[in-house]
Image (tube, rainbow, N blue to C red; front, side, top):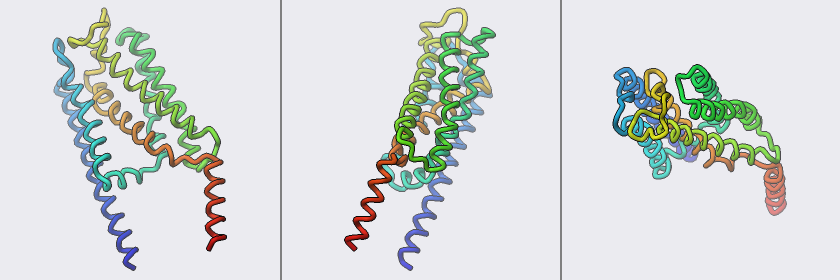
Length: 233
């Protein structure tokens, strides 16, 4: 009875933490939304401080909360790994970057590689998510999952770097006749100020939890250990 009460209390605590996290994410989204409406991110001539703050603060804040609080870790780790994976299907929006490069509203050096990277990430998230969902023990699934996360993370970091280097800020040293100004105008600004850092966090969390994907050899060792324990009992 005491164990049941402790389990129920822990479950209730996790639900409270999840609600707090969702509330913080909602406030973050709302701030990015209102900031875009107010053209907060499209100011030119100076360093891209506003965009930078929306990129750095959420990633650092959530990372510190996860690292320092066991309650936050326990609550966030309740999110199924396949759900974290399938959310990247949203990154098919990268096709828009390639279209933007084709119609000359985005620099091709930005639109084509970053759009293609997002497209590939979105494409492979679907079979990975379904394999994880059904508990596949395919021998190369964990390696593929790690490689996919690293690729997706590098693509996001590349998008940040190239977006800044082709921007109309003082850091836009590669800018020519086209810039990434479109990325800071509403509603497109939601990509660098909300979705991009959110997917960085998803990749980081997924990589941290990569051990949840079992190899077939891991499963065999687990069964052997269970049998040995039963024999000893």
